[in-house]
Length: 309
Image 1: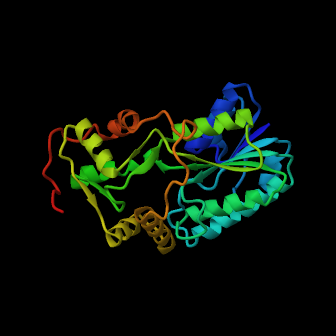
Image 2: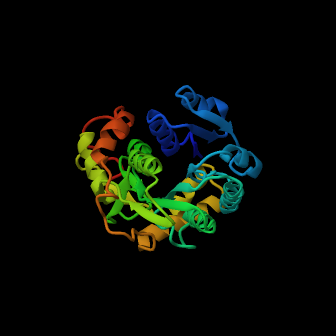
Image 3: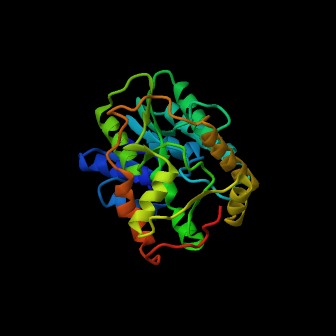
């Protein structure tokens, strides 16, 4: 029996589907029975549990031999203390694992998770890896994913509203862009093979390293605006945009810290790119399949809107 936490997330749902397609017994965990139903229709067993509830998670993990483990995939935008929330999830997972027969765990982690501080919410993933390492009889594979392509989705709004790509990240910084599809494939492959022992880390670099200048150029060509500009916004403007979206001061602090960590190079890949860490989904694929449908309503042709520095 496989257990999938965060089964309604992009990665969790894809992994559950891949395991079910191989005829495996799968128990999916989520907060909503309705959102789990699509996986139940495919043959999964559903368990509704809050991620901070150790009793519910212990029941969900009962009888399982391997698990996909992840923290809350999205920020709780108005959380007064998101790191404390992450720590409660980690403690609940630890209790459930300790009471279970699980021997293999694959985790969704992140580049920068080797750092205990200075990495914003990624510090929670450091805590998750540390907790799992404390279970000495557990075989753990931490998949440290690079920069998700899905993080470019807000560019649709800035292109529509400002006529440019806006980001607090440096435009010239090469980053390991990766699609959730590649993360899910890696997670499913290792869960099926159970090809890891002890405590291991694999960084997932995605298909290629790209800068936001590269990303902007590809988007511009695709929408008929080859001169589409990129602008790095300062931390004050970034914080204000988060505040306008309803973010708490705690979330704003964590987000600005992770941006600083990436821009400064504190958060960086530590393993050399390899065949194992290189995905198949290129940004041009993501642009075609995901971003362009959202950008298709934008007016064609070059735009002079917001060309200022």
